[in-house]
Image 1 (spheres, rainbow, N blue to C red):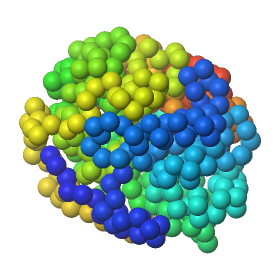
Image 2 (cartoon, rainbow, N blue to C red):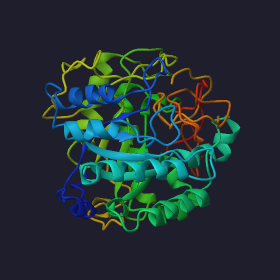
Image 3 (cartoon, rainbow, N blue to C red):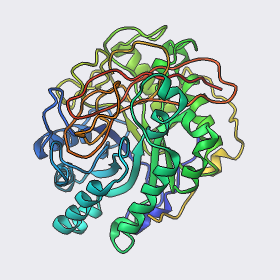
Image 4 (spheres, one colour):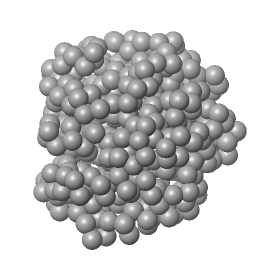
Length: 416
């Protein structure tokens, strides 16, 4: 299934073209030793991404998980300065798990607006209020001790809080979304969140879909099913792919084998065939951040602009095209007006595999998380999904981050 270019009308207010389909990577607030990233670290990532040899476009966007500098109270994350310097677009993130307010995230954004003005706000292409919170708050997430998430009602409250705080500023014109796993979106409890959004972000990793023939030859089909299910569930809201990738090294997971060759195949069969230059896409990842994650996803070594495999897209693909389960899905992302791991221990899951999730809070959200960064606001990492209706099998992945708290995230879900 090939979707037409998403027309992101809401970006017009920020000077972006109506047909912008961003290419980017995810970036957490800490390095692999759990020390804070500073401006130079973000600049190095951004320059490496922009200079990748053979890339099918310029990777000049970055998805953040928090607006707070690691291990600070509410200082703006230094990724903002790096983006201004390098001409990088930012998909901002508000960490929303394990907390009853987002006051410090908002404070950091207000400080950034005051300090940098339009130099900062012109970099912003969107904001996600939360990341995989619905999964961690689900029955499956609780069963698998994925950490403290947040309820749909609380996420909606945070969206309203953000919009009220920035109603008279440039950030009030930024399209607002939420990132979660595909089957979190197919759960009926997510409807109130979907209704409050300008766009929907989905994290999907076929690598961890054990029990579903998750070898690399089937990865494209597994991705398509999850992607189509998300599109069908979100009522015409644009769908952005906020995390996906295939590891280059690490232990096998069911039939899935990490290797440079398989990472290249996944890049071609999912990235090139389905995503790049079609929808906003944030690949996982250009740099690994979690030292305890035995599965490594970075497509470069030491941020070299020469990647581990050829990024050139092929002319033909191995994956067979699937008929869309939603005949209107091609048009459902056409336009909108903005208001603005590691160590698997059980089957299931589908969040991020790394440590890039959170503001690195001082409050642990649960016993199954991994460290990323450090601020004093609440936040806990997590992964993957509620159980979809009629679902029967499982998927595994990880995500997470809390202040110097390490653990594993696992959860179950099934493909349609």
